[in-house]
Length: 116
Image (cartoon, rainbow, N blue to C red; front, side):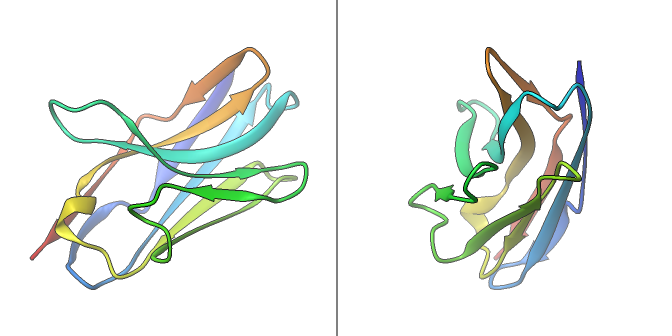
């Protein structure tokens, strides 16, 4: 099993910044990527960003590209999401995820609220 602990959520005004952190532990040896998803009530969970450990490539959802930056440390199985110029529509519960061959693992989620 893999355990994930997220931190850094909170409330921020539009245009501000926030940084989310996530640390994975347990059986992480088979993981090939870590990333972030988000979900608002009544909607499906959506992809935000991820980093591929093998070559460091990053992927972003179009809605956050240019504003959010994902980074991480493969050795520590830690990933960060720097959120800049946040917008009210970024309000959601943000979930950290570990992608392994055959399985995905999720954190408990951290709330991000952006006020206008």
